[in-house]
Image (cartoon, rainbow, N blue to C red; front, side, top):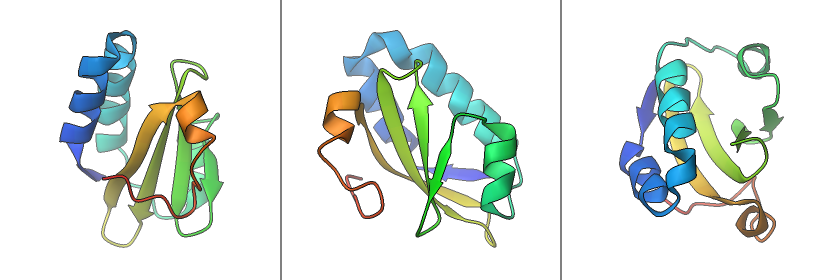
Length: 100
């Protein structure tokens, strides 16, 4: 998968250093995948939650942070839409948020 908005991950972990390793691993792991449907995402990440609008919510550092992405399956693109603390995540609509 091609991941867009990597700079948003870097900016986030510069402010939250405890998740740098986890986000870098997530970036690397997703970059090696070829998902064609939501079930592929849940197969590879058993704690992910898939949503409407081809979105997925990943738990980062257990449940400390949340990462929302939108996936264009036919083109193999992943767009980062939100990353934040669990409290910040509670304040957004995961199906429509467009932070980046």
